[in-house]
Image 1 (tube, rainbow, N blue to C red):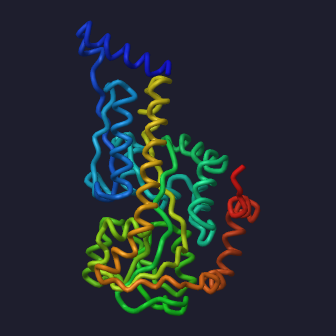
Image 2: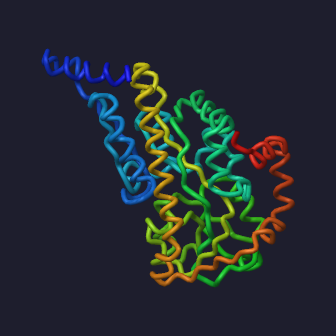
Image 3: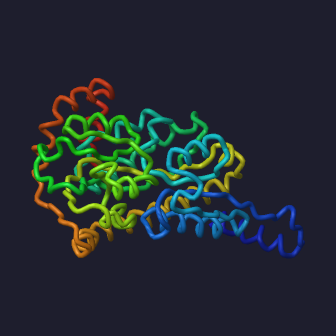
Length: 327
């Protein structure tokens, strides 16, 4: 309440004293790889509205969509270098900058959305957010990309054996690539901006993404089959240049944090809506969707890979996430 009074008083002072230099608006640029009409687009638009409102108009976020300022990895690099102010990105390329968060990409780590959100909103998620500042990046909040599912243009995937020999686009993420090789997939890492064309031209047979991404990117136009494997939960992150973050006043930092939380709320609500309606929409557009999936068979194939992940990340750290219950 005090902060709002201060902001209103500051805005009024700018008008009354007519001191344009002291009250100038700072414009910050924010980039996402997806379209404006996506679960990222609605989130960054909400973030922009909240920042402007909560800072009395002294800060304005200018959003860029569909990778207008670069793909996700390029966006993170820009934020780290300070050439880009903000970005919302999937966790895919993030371990290249903050290796500790790669543990979240282990397949079948999370039971469901409630479990994943509880982990990221709780002490584990907060600990991980704190690791970004040392890399020149300030992580404002965990957003969401969703549970990832397999699509391809060759044949239905019902069992793990059906994946063998499929050339599939993967994120630029070593944990994903290691797991997909265990399925017999031929992983082809590439930026999301290249995916539609690669699928259209047959450079790759398939890809894997949450329903929200598949629908917003219109991948049904270039993919015939989808299997609801839910094999990996994919978080998202709202990232900010640490230099820009450090330059904010304490009150403005609070405003940016509150705006990020509102963005996350809107982001998750859109994903919930897409999960409810997206499969029917994809079916209506001609995709064949396999919903009845025996996930235990997919997990069994990955047993040796899980042992390797335990050596890399520590079994106790994996179990801490897998067994987490919100208080």
